[in-house]
Image 1 (cartoon, rainbow, N blue to C red):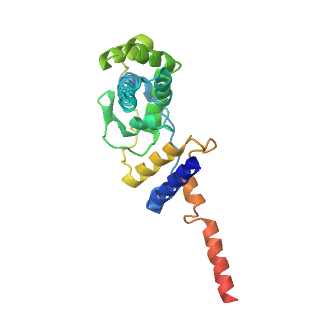
Image 2 (cartoon, rainbow, N blue to C red):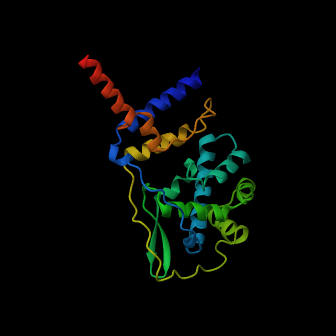
Image 3 (cartoon, rainbow, N blue to C red):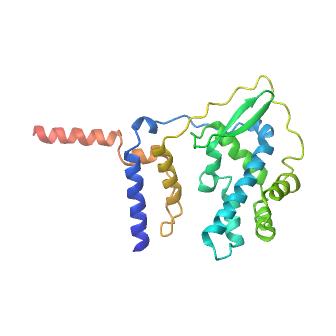
Length: 239
């Protein structure tokens, strides 16, 4: 029963947050895919930021469970999720904007989460290509060697993956610029974090992560069912 109560409380909080998000923020937007052609220009930078995240998240987990020792499984879990936007470990990707600087692309941390469009998906794809099947290797290295950040960057980006072994090519002059960085509202960011935290919650193995549109439809926010119910009520009053 405690698990059930935990799930119900989480759902209640999520719905309360959803109710505070303006309908305009939940309007459907065209799905944006990764721009694979941009990956060679940002791959090394993504690897360096990935190393920072792995180091920070492992150290944070160590501090949270102290005085217990962090397990290799816990580090593997971080490394498996850090490039997956459906997981909280990959929230760092949402804060990065891809900016053109001459014939280069630069990853700029905006300090807050933005809407996830093609640039966000491109960074996620680059991160996945860098890590590939090496997630368990880097997790083992983090567990056994406890490296400092500089050592981890060298291991991940030069030795293990070669992501920074060569200089990135110049960006073509005819490259179409990406979309502008658009920050999320606090309510929207809070709602999405809640949705991620509810996914895989103990006692709810079948729970999936719904989009904003799914949740809006479930609650009849402006849906056809709500209109039908209003019509039925009008007919009842007329009789």
